[in-house]
Image (tube, rainbow, N blue to C red; front, side):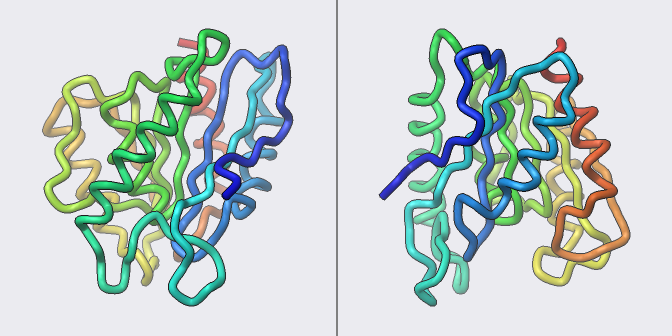
Length: 203
């Protein structure tokens, strides 16, 4: 299985954006979003990487980080640990985790939050995300950006609201941007995401 899908690999890249797709999608799913974001960052050369979930989706099309209907929370614990290992392996002296932002959508958003909160990342972006049972933010959680549609019927908005509360109870740096829409990442939210990426990479 091809673990990583690289776009715009560059010897001059100073930072990296890693994408985690949602349940039933594949590594290509968020690439247009990722390209739009990295191309809009002025003065920054950002390598774009999209990771493929390890399991086949039960319907045979797309992939999953762990079984979701019903939710296989034991698998989720293993999936988070496996993802952390992959992320640490991607870190290098040239592009360390401190210069990396992790962006995930839906199930990928949950994976980004739960795996990235204990890593020395520049930032974490959770789109239509939710918390795994028992999730507690690390005391050294990177800055977090959450976005969610108020009419999301797949992952209700309360998923991100709960995460936001958890981070603030832990005094973590977190912000949440809600939009009028469903289970998606609309163009209108690209600007706030870009601003968050720039603030993380320029700090």
